[in-house]
Image (cartoon, rainbow, N blue to C red; front, side, top):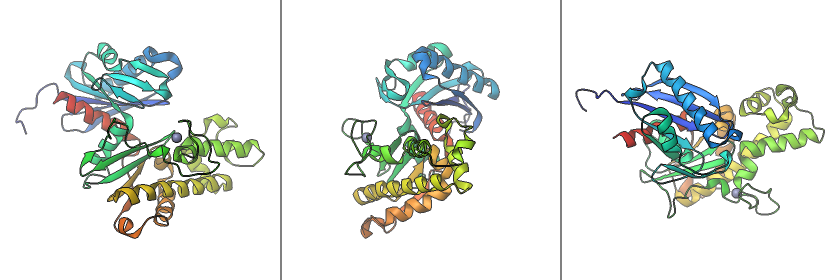
Length: 328
Ligand SMILES: [Zn+2]
């Protein structure tokens, strides 16, 4: 520990998602001072979205009363493939971006150094440093939201694979025959049956076929407005349709977790993302039961299935970790 803190030690962490932007300011001791949120509006194009990121960060800095000159660095979690050592978004399907030099463009807007990190890797690093993975050496993260992302920490290190593409657990095939089509083009992937998008799709299809559900009322008749929060409310009200779909989803997630447990023999499978944040208390016991039904005993003996403990903050915390590495 240095005895005198240097002046430029504040850090900004950003979670840039397809739907919303979260930005938080951290003090030199790592405490979160402020946290702001904005919608992404990807239809405005890369420059428009980067303007919104900068606005969100400016609001967070103002709320924390931290001047731009006191920021050491900012890290941004992005749902896509990052190249150029954290400089370029090579491809981000949810944002419709290709080859966007987002680090430089944000740095021009904000006047401090910026680095980019894949959002799932950011979330996994956050779980390792601040969440349920803190005291673990080998674990798997499953983030269940719009899609399903995965992070592998093996012997204390984030495993990236031979081409940096490891952890695509959303594309493990769990329905071998007649599975629904996945965004990747294959059929029967875990993401195609157990992501929040898959859950919403099944519920909307059933309602459109005439099935009644409190969801219709909870989203004011606009089925495109179904969010994890609405699903949680419908579940707690005992809605039969939502309960049946969520229970099915837990079975699939349990099968996915069992495959990972059997292959990797981890200490834990750690669950996060919007759907788990909203429904973790009802989903975790069911996912655990389903997983145990498909694991071989040697791997299953000591494995635990845990909530990440970070809620919606995994992305901004991971962005802050990347920023701190850049500033070091
Ligand atoms: Zn797939």
